[in-house]
Image 1 (tube, rainbow, N blue to C red):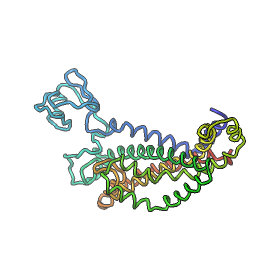
Image 2: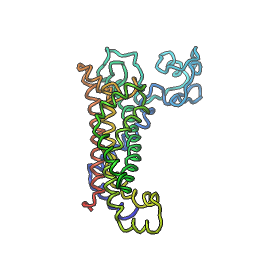
Image 3: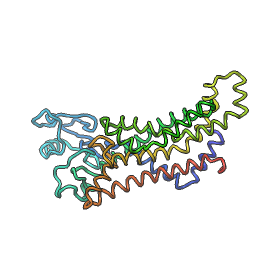
Length: 337
């Protein structure tokens, strides 16, 4: 690591709020990646008559454990539980429900309040709220990461081309951006989402159409400044092609400036996804969604745990990303060094 990057890392670490937010976010994200081991209706491990089974990875028919049918085992069936316990044991996840598990043995009508069995209660479809938050957190972060990566590639490329070639290319590009960025994005997203069959890939593509513009201006400005530097002029005099100059000398500097915007692009992506899910134009019905949880809280004001769980989940996630973004911005600020 060169001295400049060492100084940047030291500056980021000195911002305690950003540094702790980074570690909290990293731990939460890693835990969410293993959501199947935290919240799952299938046991993690089953020992039956000396044999080991892993229902979290593989489906087993009921006959495997002495049942009568060849269908997939229902590990919540008391009959199956008794059969397994007579000849072995079951190791379950801390939350014995997945995000789409409909709980049938509730003692109260749905949405039911928090209990020792359902830590954050259930929603109006008898699904465990805590499990849906864990899976919804993972989907939101992975979706935001994919959208941020795609937006960065397109935005950096367009900004670098505009800034390097300037002239008519820059003029046409800026006029197009002025028109494109002034479109009513949320309304267009709702219209497009209602036309196509909702899926996470369609939603990612639709949002990518409008999110790449965030980085164009900063990369363009950095490229316009860098293209006049002596080392770029020398590289051009030595016979390097435009592509070689862009890749070796322009983009590394422009990418550094763009890095400070990435956490804020992620924040915007999560907010947009939550808004679309809240309005019913986001992920397919039944998906683990924080926005859908907020919509249930709005529809069930007599069940405050739904709205509060969704609000605090989104608020904590966005707060962590904002604090991380502020730390990265300060670390890459040349005035701070």
